[in-house]
Amino acid sequence: VTKVVVAGAGSIGSLLAAHLAQVAEVTVLTRREEHAAALREQGLRVSGRGDFTAQLDATTDPAALPDAELAILACKGTDLEPLAARLEGTLRHAAVMTIQNGLGAEEIVAGHGEWPLLSSVTFMSGTRHGDAHIEYVLDTATWIGPYRGTTEEDARRVAELVEAGGLKAEAFADLRPAQWSKLIFNATVNGVAALTSLPHDFHFAETEKPSDLGILVRDLVDEGKAVAAAAGVELHDDPWAMNVLATERGHRHFPSMLEDVDARRPTELESINGALVREAWRLGIDVPLQVAVYRLVKAREASYSE
Amino acid sequence: VGCGAVGSLFAANLSLLADVEVWAFDLNELHVAAINRGGLRLSGAGDVLGHPRATSDGAALPACDFGIVATKAMHTDPAITATAHAFADGFVATVQNGLGNEETIVGHVERVIRGTTFPAGKLLEPGHVQWDVQGDTTFGPYDERVPLDEVERLADACTRAGMPANAVDDARGPQWRKVIFNASTNPIGALTGLTHGRVCERPDLRALVTGLVDEGKAVAAAQGIELDADPEELIDHAAKPEVAYDHKASMLQDVEARRQTEVDYLNGGIVRFGQEHGVPTPLNAAIQALVKGVEASWTQN
Image (cartoon, rainbow over all chains, first blue to last red):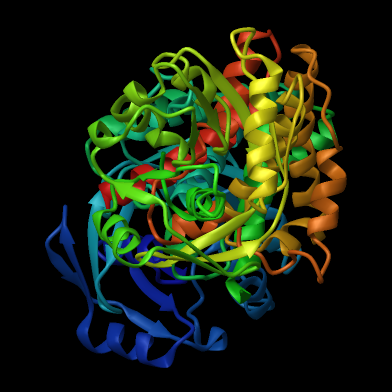
């Protein structure tokens, strides 16, 4: 049986851990001991689109992790650097897969070990109801591609494992087109949601009046597309079409950046909007609206101390 | 017309003049009743007890020589609709924030005076307004239907009443200076939660403010408007600790209280005049859309 480590058990980590535990031996690495204890003792319940309780192991000690073949780092982007540092010298035979939003996660992990690396982006979503219960909300796919010392074949094997566990996954020879589609989508939708307090709903696709929010969203997406084009990336999906489709599903999703701002937590701004703006500047592309959104959310974080 | 904080400053002060009879029109019936019972009291930058006659019924107004519209910009149309009959032979000045108020008023009355005012205050309780800051008012004819000496007559009355005012041929300079200042700083405070001083001390955010100012200046220049002062200097002046560093922009106060903002008449006004004169204003449009999104979130969540 394949041994898998899932490090970080927020919404995405919990969904992966519970489903993979149906087809693999899963150990979850958590930060809090009571979180690990709850998972060991109660298992991890899945509701919503699934209805089962997964049995799995959990620990807070990286040294206690099994000799896994695959480790998925599913923490938030802001927690990735300290997590990768804690994992230095462990998981000697594992391929390590990142799944964070934005750009740059792979480079952060690469700086802490020689592991073969896989990239991924995910479009699924879940809502945590406590440490041992995750509601599976959106059953959209996770896309996986090779990054360092891995091949498309490795990505395909992981995708098949994720699919066997009951989630949706697809392997790509080059993940960058998908990663950039999601980067532009997240920088735009998450940033606008954080600034307006609107969940991702129909306002984001309204384009009738000049002051409609959809016009700003479309202009932000167009700036992102210009950066992708200059970076030589041919997008896998049109972020504007992704936006319209998501709003038409009728589910009012609260992007994590909005939840973070509401709770006055640090956001993933730097790895999403910051990454896009820095790429634009590096390539000499003018993106005044993306810069404005980036600066406004950054200032919003600074206002937590007011 | 509109006897909130700023309207009350004009109404109470003007009612002290022996040669002026003042009527106050406001929909706040408690405020109206208090004014009719015990007068309209100002305290703070000046202590005044005036006795204008107040009403919430536009039809009760007599024919007037001058009107001063001081409502929030989104209430201009219903306010002037209810009161226009009183100004059939008179002149109506606006001292409101933003752009487009003159255009709305001139749809209901013949002779309109453009105005920009800097005094500020807040309604403490019915019949009682705190006068926070004194300041000048500039009036000018909206179009050729208004002779300058009539504008001077209004400015003279205000000045004699303790509300210094001057009459100029073209009052668009002070108006656009104030609009550009407000449009470039108020929504930034509203979207970030930062006071004016903290907005200005962040170089990246201050650069965004400059981007908004530059668009506003370009739209003003395209209309041949000469600003009477550089908004950039006023913004930096206001950021000083002894001036308005800790000031929460009125739009931030509106957002915190979930009141509709005047963004459509500030950034939205710059965007609209920009379109009419072929000047692109992408940042002002973006800011307007974001603040409208904030307003929409109050009814959605």
